[in-house]
Image (cartoon, rainbow, N blue to C red):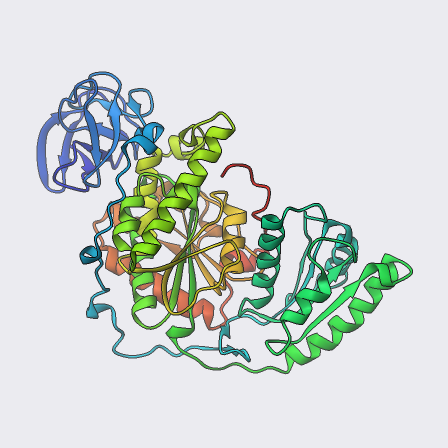
Length: 502
């Protein structure tokens, strides 16, 4: 008897918890389905629980995730070879009716009875950093050499973060404003204790203007290469300033802070069938704990919301927020069509498909689980800052490195990152906590994981149990314990600029 997982009683497909062979008897939980597999089906992929006619809807999580392109027998394999993604006609069929009565608050059961012990670095404007970095960032590609050289000079100083910039001087107004938000967002991140902006002097976003906007918030300085005889001379001047700022940062001491000071980024990458089955719901549970107790949580990866937008619209605090979410998705959808392609041609990615995810709708329904049940308080542009406490969504790319980096631009001081197939990606500005519920990733990629949640899919352990384990790990890492990504030196980053339609 082989076990399969059905998420909702109305689903007509289930996920194989182990590889199936023709003739295998199937069971859900402790009950026999009186159903046999009709063909070989890989672990984590979908099996039809009853006959599905050509044109019939494929239902998972209680939602339609696709349409059968041919008749599928009960016990048959359901995947990209016989399923059409409904996202292809998204604009024609989408319904974005907002109902304020549908908005629900997080239950009181998520309120902590005892506040965990937590320490951090309190900044002048009131935010809290759980790391205390000196950020050295260039404002244009022409100012990168001194910053690259300083990365080598300070390679043994883990509190120095050097960020080079792919941009420059020929920017239209929208891109200039986006670039300014991104650079200021990095500088304003609570984990940054001091910042040095490095520019050439003729770029679109000027280092001295950024520096002026940081006055009174944290120690800030700027250097313009055109004011020196060489890049080497610029580098030497910056290095002297960096050593002085490091002395100031090393003199800082942690003080008692609270869960309300956590700004949690929720992220997933290299997703597979276990991502929606356990890992992302557990992140959502942890997010509920953070938000209910006064903190902030931010969900990104805009192009991964298609098919799950009804969930986000239902959670929106206001009609304005719901309309902004809908407008963002329409912009991305049309941008892909402008390039002559549909968004579902790029998403899900090949690795997602190999991991059992068939359609973008299916992937999106798993993606949105990371936000838990909190009302959405607002929609942030890239580099935008949350206006208050609560849960926000942020417009940023689906690619892991720029998406995580963009979350730090919107103030996230710690990241929860689920991965089904395994991903080592970190970020220079915030500790990234990796988790997986995949038995394969847990075995092969265990050295990159902070939390293993395989028992949630294999042994029936509750999502709540997984959520609490994640919360405890967040508290430990915020308190100073290195995450695995930090210990391995993973500081990948990529600016979410010029990313194409998505």
